[in-house]
Image (cartoon, rainbow, N blue to C red):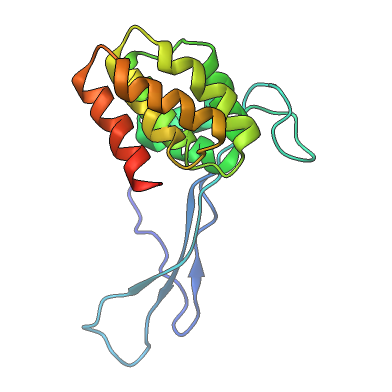
Length: 183
């Protein structure tokens, strides 16, 4: 026998319990004197958490868990969003991912560019300089753009060399543009 679900008491809110890590909390309101108006829904809180699932190297003070599994789960695979989240949440983990050379060139170029937005030259420069020697011109170009915000004397000298000698005209142009914009 099917019985209808009880409706919330008139004039009182009905609260639905949270559903998980990314949950919504709803309040349904009904007014006792208006019969034709449907219940209204208010979105009170949206909480999204990236929950570390496997231990990894220490990234942030007080934690020792990798955020990469949670970020990958959120985005469904490597993409700009993954690299942007890692740059914001765990830049060392992004640098380690770049240094391991496990990414495809199309992903590595985005990761290099985005790592450049991290304001930590002692992390960024040693990670991105080796990419200037990558066999992939796309990766070299991503490294050029990533290094654009970290123009130390050594980086400037390397970019000058790239602007004159790189095999790819696109990489040479990118290096020239970065040097011209910042000198």
